Image (cartoon, rainbow, N blue to C red; front, side, top):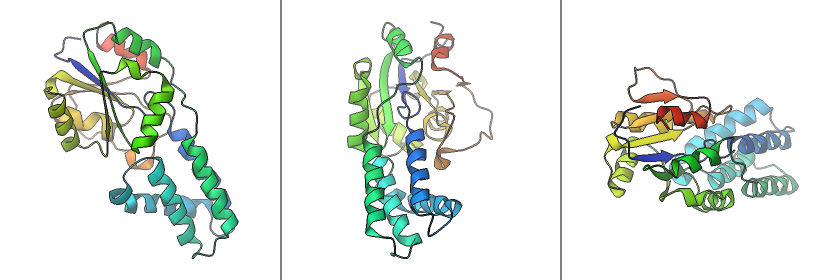
Length: 232
C-alpha cells in the first residue's frame, strides 16, 4: 500500500488484549445474584440503561461498570437486596480489576515487526486511568509505544485534540482497533486511515453499522495482516 501514514495508533481493549469477555463474565454472575428479584434479561436491560445514564458522570471503564452494577442492583430490588449479596457483587467487581492481561494472538509479533520500521506507534485507549495503566504495565508491551493516550472518549473532536497534541495531520495517521464506532470511523471522517479488526464479542454501546462507502479503510481478521496493508 502506498500511503502517507507516519503514525499508527492502536486501541488497547479487545485489540491488544482480552477485555470484554471479563465484563461479560462479571455481568452474567451479577444476573445470577439478582435472579431472585428479576429475570436475567431484565437485569441485563436495566444494567445497560444504568451504564448509559451514567456515561456523562463516570465515563468508560471498570469503575464506571462497577458503580453501575451496584446502582442497578439497588434499583431493581427497590433497595431490598441483602447486604450479603451486595458484598458478593463488590467482590465480583474487585475480581474484574484483578483479571490477568492476556495478549491477543500475534500482538507481540506485529509490534516487534513495526518497531523496526519508520512508523511511530502510539496507544490510544479510553477507560479508567488507573485500570488502563495497570493493564498496560502487566502487558509487557509498553516499550513498543512512543506515546500513550488514555482518553475519556473517542469521538472526532477527541481525535482532533490528539492529533494536535502529537503534531500530526490526519492524512499521516492510521488507527487500528476492534470498534468501528470509536476506533475507525472518527479518524476516517477526519481524513486518516482506519483498520478494523472485529472481536468476537462487542459491548452493545460500541456496535454500529457502516452506511457509507469508506475510503482508506480495511477490515482484517488478524492483526498480523497489517503487514500486507503496510506492504511490510
